Image (cartoon, rainbow, N blue to C red; front, side, top):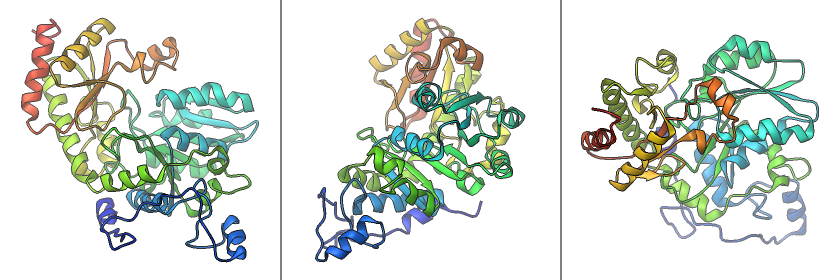
Length: 400
């Protein structure tokens, strides 16, 4: 792929108000005008470089938005106070009463709950399908379908969406393809593969320090502007505004994203290969045993690897809980949800981040009680980490 996202990010340079190498943080909720006419023009969105009120926009948020648009190769990007703020704004902007959505069956639990339960209040219905089966997506589309929604690498089963095929299908039916790329920044570039809208929870890999919650929508300039429209923009009217200080912090952390993603991927590949050799049931896109390994190879940016997320199936929730507790006790990471931290994070998604999905549906999609999702950290000596993790499993009788 010709597009070099890391180069685009590093080429962005901003000067602070007093010449600082970091842009100054906008510490105001409202902004003043010399001319009343300029204020009214700004309220209508017609004045370049002027700011009215922080719920509309701030310089700090626009700097971060530009960096994220450069990351995904889109015309524009809007930032939000959470990943769910970004996701729900897109859905509410695109869908009205009586509309229909085709969604992957394996998605973040909060997104699933919003699509399965919340939007029904507005008579918006969702068909959940195996996103790896393009025929299933085709069969689910109706005349009322307004979007196809998926995750590039799904949470938590790590299913891989064929973005090119889905984009071609969406284009044929004149509906947008919306891709959540939270698990695979830099590794996959959905917009360059044909996706119309790309979403991230910035909380995760992009920020990378587990100290803030934020989200982004990357897309065309027109779509991003529509989200901020004062009369009918979902983002504007729902008020999911990102704080300027958090925007500035995320922007600084983005400068090391290319380094971090490579290390996350390197470590996850090492652990997954070794635990598979030990006889554990491991799911990781970098393994040849993964059913979509070749699909991942065909659409990834190879230098950033297969991502930092892997799963282990330990057989039972009891074993999973014991192993996670012991790994935390031995300082191998934290028993915590989320991902992208410098330390490894592990959780049993069936009872945490995917608990919104009913048990029978978890079983249908292959989400077992013994499944552990691991967000692999930036450990320098990953062989040491592997041996310590394996010792935990031996001590618990999971491995001999």
